[in-house]
Amino acid sequence: MEAVNPVMCDELQHAFPEFERYGSGFVCYAGEEASSSPLGVNHILSLGSSASITEWQNAPDSDFLARVAALEKEEPFASLPPHERALAAQTETIFRKIRSLGGVSVFCHPYWVCESRYYSTPEENDCLLRHGSFDALEIGNYKVERMCLLNARILELARECGFRKPFGAAE
Image (cartoon, rainbow, N blue to C red; front, top):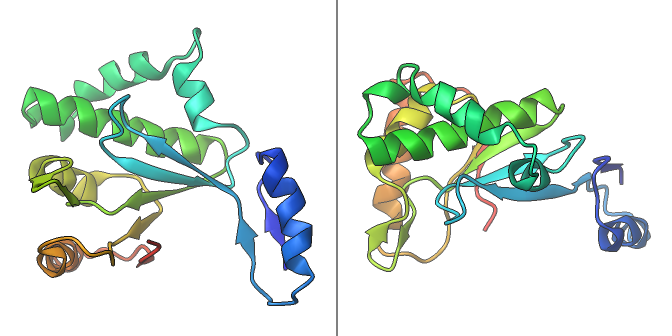
């Protein structure tokens, strides 16, 4: 087993060698779940980044908000309604930051329904699936009403856009 990621909490640094004793052949990647806003609207998994995305977002001298504001003025984000524009630009900013830090970004379970409503809107998710710079996609396999329809929508867009990034379920 190989452990990959220079940014790792103490607990994980001790867990990888312990797990290695089992000789499973698994390759383990420590990751960080980042969110597109303080509300955690879109979940993004950062794998292999050389620094923490959350620490970058929350640092007093962070350029996160400036990057988001600039991206909101660019197409395709500029043509979205204000709410979707802000959240899609935040999410895309995180995808790009992960890549600049040498990591892989995973767009986690778009079209997720929580408490009978979309967690982020279909317009936002459609835009990100068509134009986002994420590296992989997670589709849901958890028990949520209409999950089959939500996964079908993701696969429909994947086919429409010639989507060739890896995807799978991690829940």
